[in-house]
Length: 222
Ligand SMILES: *Cc1c(COP(=O)(O)O)cnc(C)c1O
Image (cartoon, rainbow, N blue to C red; front, side):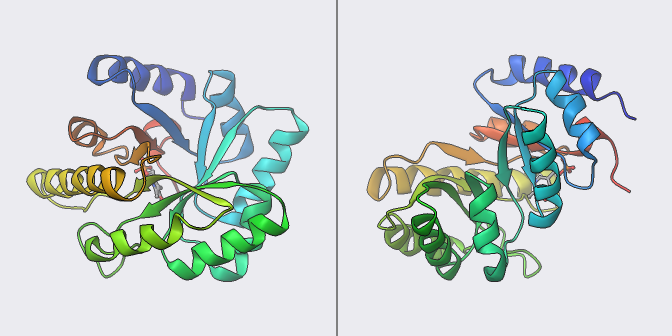
C-alpha cells in the first residue's frame, strides 16, 4: 500500500505554508477500509466518498471500530438513494437539484436529523458534469434555505480540466458566488469546497476553505 501517512504529512506541511485554516478531506473512493483506517491512524478525520453503497460498507466498519470520522458524500446522488444517504451521512456536499434537496429534507425530517449540505456548481458549464449553473444557484439557494431539516453550509465544484488560467477563473467565479450568497441569502454559508490533487494550490489561492484529495493521499486509483 502507498505510504498514506507520509503523503498526508507532506500535504499538511504544504497547507501549513499555503493557508493553515484550509481543511483537508481525504477522498477514499475506490480504496479499501484498510486505507481509511491507515489515514485515520495518522490523524485524518474528514473523509469523502462518491458512491453511497461503497461508502456504507466503510462507514459500518468504521462504526464497529469506533472511529470518529466525519463522512461527506461528494458524488452525484440519485433520487432513489436519497433515503439511504440521509441515514448514513451528516454531510452531503453534492446537492445538484432542488428535487434532490426536497427529498433529502423529507427523509431528514422523517429520521429526525439535520443534514449539512453544499450545493454543487457546474462552474465551467461542462455538459458531462452535474451541478447548478451559475445562473441557477441564487434561486436554488433561496428555496433551499427554507428547508427545515437541511443546513446549507457550503458550495462545491470540480475544477475544469483545462489550462491554469481557466481553472483559476472557475475558482474565482466560485468565490464570488460564495460571497454574494453569503451576503444576500445565506449568512451561515461557511465552506467553499474546491481543489483536488492536481489543482488544490490554485484553489487555495482563490479562497477554498476545504480541499478534497484522493490520489495525493492514497495513490492512483485502478
Ligand atoms: C475523486 C474526487 C476527488 C479527488 O480527486 P483526486 O484527483 O484523486 O484528488 C475530489 N472530489 C470529487 C468530487 C471526486 O469525485
